[in-house]
Length: 319
Image 1 (cartoon, rainbow, N blue to C red):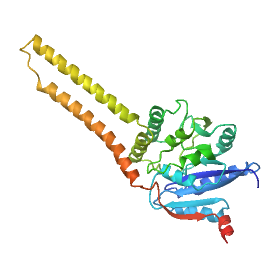
Image 2: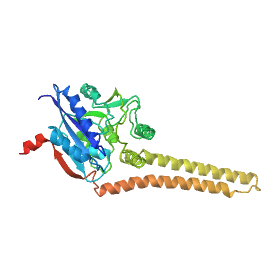
Image 3: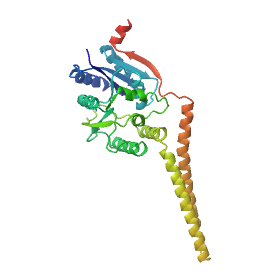
Image 4: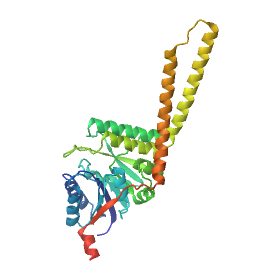
């Protein structure tokens, strides 16, 4: 077969009941594109607690274009994608989720829009069929990317996207312990586009994103790809200093005008609590930066690969 090679990267976590259906539907979609494209599937098991990797091994045994990577523990979706990017060999890379909610029938439009001249193309959902908690987290993440990483306000970034190979090749040069894909993509290019797609309802299981994981992901974006939180801390410190100076000046003037005025301990305590809280907050932000620098200096890995399984075609080549 001739044509460009498309590499599909699928991070997998507790998707024993869905990953097989996703790869089967993907194969059906690719049959309609086989005259122009060939494809490969890279599935990364991110420390699942069920039989996800057994399913991945089964898919690889029955497929001629699949590869499975198994992490030693859970490192997170973004680390799984980075591992997948390092294993691809295609001309374009398409990222998918493992839960069956992505409209795979929109893959041709994503690919053709990328071919039209964009470096990366993201699916844009008119209405996401996530839980209320996930939707709030997604909106906060979009806002954070806009404010801290200067993402274009009209660009919707999510986990269903297609990029030219040079984009992911640049992204994998990042070897820090805390990869954050939005920051990495925005560091490589600003030549983006959106394609409107329909989000499906979840048929099996529940999301792997907890509040702890979402906060951890946001902190990666805060501390790894932007110094704006530190600048905000500087401005907050300056503002508190101005407020303290004005408050002290007012107190002195009041005492000079009316010596009988009693200086209240409650107002002084309020000011001390406010200033103390702000100092602790700013020290916490600085501590996050310093802690992550320390971990990176210790060369903490993005992920650890425990097993790799190849397709039957790769096994035949090795023989």
